[in-house]
Image 1: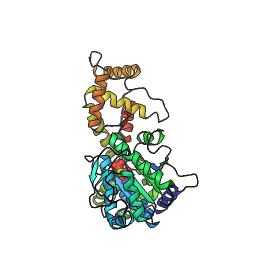
Image 2: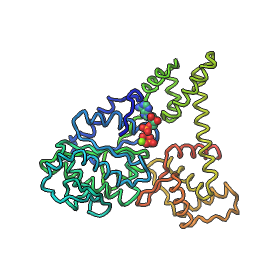
Image 3: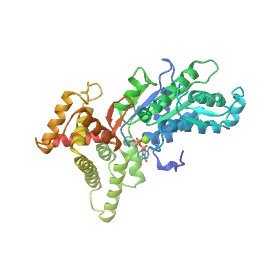
Image 4: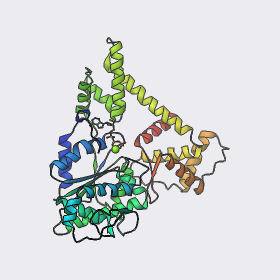
Length: 396
Ligand SMILES: Nc1ncnc2c1ncn2[C@@H]1O[C@H](COP(=O)(O)OP(=O)(O)OP(=O)(O)O)[C@@H](O)[C@H]1O
Ligand SMILES: [Mg+2]
């Protein structure tokens, strides 16, 4: 974990305490875990690293943190196994002492059924066919503490069979640590930026974390805006500034940028109205980000653009709505209507299954779409959905 100057962050200790209580509560039985869902770039990872992990540690729990997005080129299952392996090496002495019976040391296999990726753990006391679940149990046995495994951007584990198997393996570990006598227990906390994607993890009976509690993670509030204004020494009304922040989807980055531009402008023209400046600079920033994105979509091959817009339109209907299949006749009609409106009736573009599949693959490769290993698709960023919906409205 990188060391970061603590002053750089606005802390939410009360929220961390409430969420830690929730994650550890067993009054209704052990849940399948806790999932924190919030849109992209709203501060999930920062909160988890700066506030929630320290809160768990303060409570004397053993915490392992895995960020599945820290390096997209690394396989999600490898990220999980690496984090556990690091923890195992840290506990090496204790593990050697505690697990003397697991004498023959060699490899750690990812996957509940012993297939999948192998890691050489030759310096550790694990048996030659130890699974990821065994490794997790070893960590907990060695530390003699409840284990909290935090997986940031958990939905990425769902994109491949190995990632999915790693989650099943963790489920096996969790069940065993929570029910076997003499064990210290385990809880899983995960974050994700798209409810559709997380729903796949939580709602499917066959999924590793079926029944986990899904929490709408609260975005940063007025107190954050006030903190930032004070730091920036800007004397602006916090309530009205907070409205600007909300207008930017409660995302710190564009807000910080607008504040910095406001401060610069005020330094040169102190007579200007700071709040009016902030409002107009934030609006201009948002419009330009949206225009950039819409222009990029306009430059995609027409079928890809039409598909992305259709998926975005469906996403605005909410998770409860029954979706039209991507290869259904209804979808085919809708794509044809969009293509005709966009490039005229003689476009000649096929909307048969192979063309649609090809376009979906391209959109996924370019990170516009996310695809689960079971074939479900979701628009990668909810901001894309909003921008395309607004643009559709403007064009209708
Ligand atoms: N509590 C905070 N104090 C100061 N800055 C913050 C805070 N939370 C988030 N930020 C800033 O907001 C930006 C996004 O934060 P972060 O990466 O935590 O969001 P995220 O929701 O995890 O994003 P992603 O969807 O990409 O995973 C970063 O630049 C971060 O520094
Ligand atoms: Mg994050």
